[in-house]
Length: 297
Image (cartoon, rainbow, N blue to C red; front, side, top):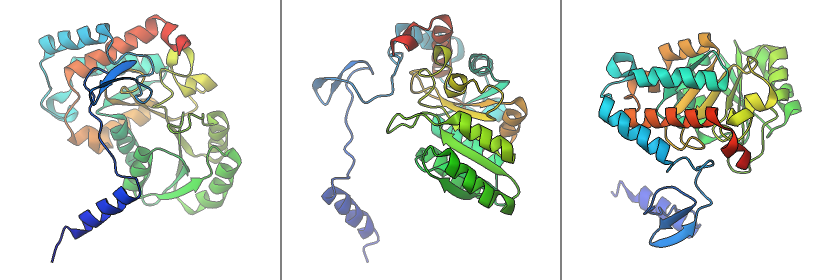
């Protein structure tokens, strides 16, 4: 019996359907013009919205951090992996996003997996936009909560789903992307938070594509709608407009502190490197110092 036959059959099906992923090789840094598979091309498909991924100021910060802190913490954050750089970045990100606290994790994908399961479980319900990112979907599944999908960016449908389903469960969480990655449309966060507040439902927004794009100086969708202190949890990434890597969970201190105690990606995966952390700090410096790049975008 060929125990791997299913792999070959599925791969053949993907190839015949023109769905087989072909991995391109980047032969130069992420920038407006790049060398890809030997050709110089104009880049329209990275998330380097502000051009910071190859910015000399971020590169210098990363190099200096390696000299001062080494190449890696060699531990998880909860044992011996939390360096002063991590805490400084968390303070700066909280101040930048105008929230009480922030937690820096390994990626935006990890941030959603870290934040959702501590907040809801098998006795609870999640209200999720139909077009939410895969990391949100996976975080919801990991929680074990009932997932109720509402129609894309439809406040009325979200309210109808909450009214129908919330009484059956212990508590609820409404989760949406901020800027949706495929179409670039913006969630009606003002309407969604108003509905959630009426029903006592927690709110969470994944602002991965909104940071550096929306709000004053790129502070994101919560700032764009003036909802500071209203939205309970903001998820972000440092790998898009910030040009580096890592994720952030930001919001009310009680929530972020609770996630520090419960989030498995934070507790059981090694801390982000000093070079990455320092480069993220340099990106925050740039965005706090000038709105020019965001205005240009």
